[in-house]
Image (tube, rainbow, N blue to C red):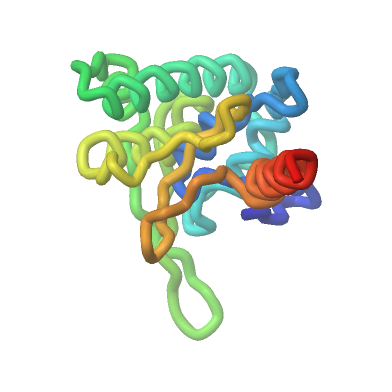
Length: 192
């Protein structure tokens, strides 16, 4: 899934904010691709990945890139551990949840009012809080049989299989599914 945000294209393949965060570093054509290079790029990603009801600032907080990368690697470990049925070390997530409490705010809008969500605390903690909440919900309530890693052995992306039949195999048809189909076709044609 692609979303437009503040003029930047945000590519989302995970169908869940926590998995989308994990997918911001990926393997493409045999090399690792880091999709964040600055605090501003993380903020642009957040604008596309979190619900519009979450209030985000105009400028990125200093240190956001490093905090987001630490969170990403922690989530990657936690999701793999949860998938494998291993015990989880939730100290980092619990700390982030405690440092960035949620506040509901009503804003006057044309014809009524709109409910917005604001997170309090240090700037980078507050910015990452919506994804931390999504991760906490996924780890505690998620059906992990539907949390899958792309079947392309060279791909590192994860996704939540929301398909009707729960038979989704690829992070994206454009990234891995079509490549698999082409490779299978060529292999079949070479063998004929």
